[in-house]
Length: 184
Length: 191
View 1 (spheres, one colour):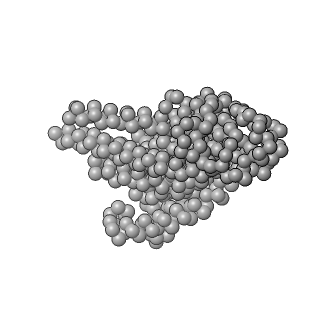
View 2 (cartoon, chains in turn green, yellow; view 1 turned 60 degrees about the vertical axis):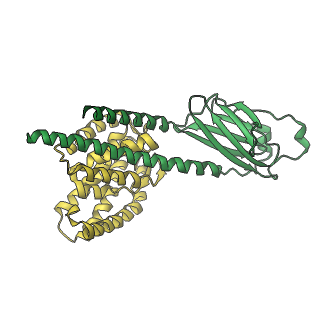
């Protein structure tokens, strides 16, 4: 009897801790700000993911198209070179990781003339000149991110329900025991 | 419906936490083992239903079954609400840890209004159950608006009440539906 009690306490504590670390999840937003793609990663509290490692992959290539580190606000930007699906992985090396994809069509790409300029990493803010020049780029939040969040949502719901039922179970056991004692 | 952390001042949240914990204790006193499973299942249902929400000015609009909680459990609704709000805040950042007491009191207010309506006012049970569901959402909204005004956010915050009226009406119909279902399946659940 004592052993089961300890076991349940242990399960409960681990579950609570996993919940708490989960509570510190990451939000990743991808914005098209022609000709840059700006990725911003924040914790759910709104705080930016500082100095996190960012890797950008094109389609299903294994070699990263671009790598870098986020700035104080959790922002990172890059210039896509060709149309296709870009996969962005953010990892802050303390166990927080988030993946997002963004689709780039050829209309978004800059005209071939300025192609000669080397692609620059501008952590944080976007170059003012570039931003004001073309402001027609659509900025919808990337849908694939929302999709991957949905399964996480379901898992969280299941976790919450399981926790509540677990508490019910433990309470029931305790109260039953108490009742049995009172009968004696 | 859930107030987030950092919106209300500490002078409001800390006493509210103290009162809420007292009420949770009062609600959980002398529990019988036959009551607990029902409460647990209800808490799970409540947990799920209040996750469908729309954010609004530091709080949110959603259904909650608070009226039904009051009808079914009376003061026992407080532990249920407390556990629900705790997990919603830990898992979904829906609400906040410091404002847990405020939120519990608000939702509990809805549950208690529904409880009083159900037990004390005579009349047609269908209409009464609608009123319970309606009050279960409206009373927390009124309480919340009152708190915001107390915290000097201005009287404009009363618009929260008007925004919650559609949700309250939907909740009222849902409660009638659940009442009818319980009457068919297990009438002793709701007397």
